[in-house]
Length: 267
Image (cartoon, rainbow, N blue to C red; front, side):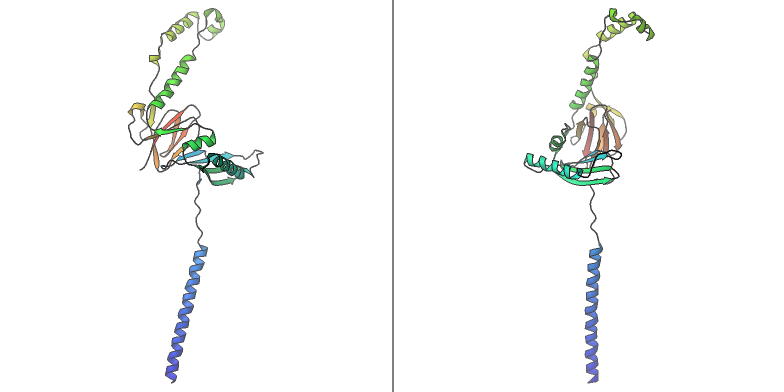
């Protein structure tokens, strides 16, 4: 009888210990689950310069960086103002084409990430005129032709009797030199003006003409807005003289003229 009771007692103790272990394991699992924090995705990351990111689905992400340190600008309501502007724009469009993604303010530097459904929404919201299309040489060539024509039109001929000979002599010229220059300018024709754009190859840094670029999937952006242009999941292929290469997927448009940047996505 004592042996039977002993066996029952041992079995009960074993069951009790198993139950305790199950509760203990469940508690540990719950604790670990509570301790794990979901990592928040940052759209801005370590970007500190104005950047426009092109995505392969046609959307664009604009990261604006503005340093207000040392100014009297009150930024306390800036985030709410930006969101209000987005809401107003979307209401006018009748569909959500712009979405607020992230806002970071550190030591006076305000960085904002805003996503656009397409280039038209970006231009309309910002009052800009960026052009994105499949690559073709015509737009780049037209920029070169317009610049050449503008430079040619800027040459002004002056009658000899309007020239101060003393000032001309101080500059190292005389009337005969001026007449010779006028004849040289007059002999130039539109045929002498450049008509083909040149690009720098982002891989080799060789300079090539616009009609030497071949690629059915090549894209291009034409812009006079100085900022960084980043190709997500893609790379920069060529850029004209008004752009600079930052890294293999980013080019910077300068303030000197209209930039043309050729790129492709890694499909």
